[in-house]
Length: 425
Image (cartoon, rainbow, N blue to C red; front, top):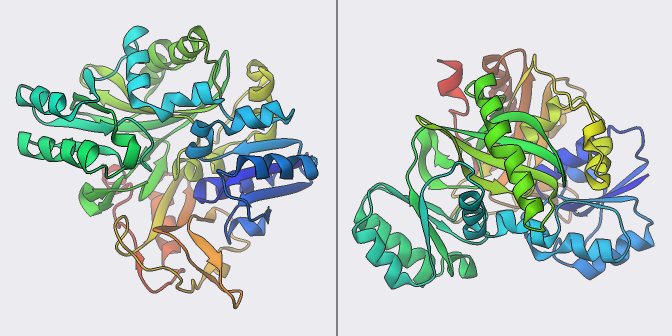
């Protein structure tokens, strides 16, 4: 069969790499892809938001299955366009992708169906938001309602910071129209855990847990990013937590979406906070996380194409989802110095050949391209996801950081503490 993957980041590279392992697949295309993805797929110069061109390409090449990796096209309704054209596509329709596309929608859904989450209020008027903050308990969390590249969440320690946050989101429009409406919610304490799941509209099957590092600098300092590294599984995601979440969060979310006339097919990413009062939902995403995909998919033992097709066909109950639970995986993001604010691009990357033929070591490309001389060069804030698997988190972490030394480019930057607190515990 022929598969088309839509996107250009490390998540899409991990998906393409996993799809390439399926004996069913004879050809993979990726639009627009990147330099690393080109090693397993034919990259085509069509943007992720160019729906008409993507549909036309899928028809022309007789694509059997299209996998949407990114949030923007999902929220924009790409799945609906493919389905209208009679094409098989993996991902939620527009009316279901709102689970990620609107923080206000998802918070209201959780309130209506008693899914555990932080107390909150929503605002479209900046003056009302500022008045509310005058009597609110600090610290407090401000969230842009719409998509903001994973950065539209502000944790404000005091009233001054919170007021500045309202200014930034609603008046200065730092994230554009994503800040037209904001959610102000209570600050929860506890461990954060990411749990990805496959959903077929009726049932949910959980992938392995993971834990992200969002801040740009060591010690969880600096600005929020799209993610500076990740590890899987999380030692804090216990059997007790899993049982609670399956009963009160995962299936209830799928049931709630179905009850609202928005059946969800694809991947739901549950961002959880393990609070003293039990697990609560921080956020939902409507696709694989990045870099969560890079640490979860290497441990998936199923043919991923079988799983994708079961989600599309509503037959996920027939899939016995399996992960290598004897192994841990760590991903360290190599970024461009200055990310997430300002950084230079176009620097040649050296050392990628060291990953070839090595078990347990992977390099997933996030922001790379070929220059005019055919060299692989940096082309984004997050450049590479250097990933390793080991018999323990400590071993996987040591191997991942060993592998980061193989790669060199001019303004290379990384955190040095991904998973450190855990493997030292």
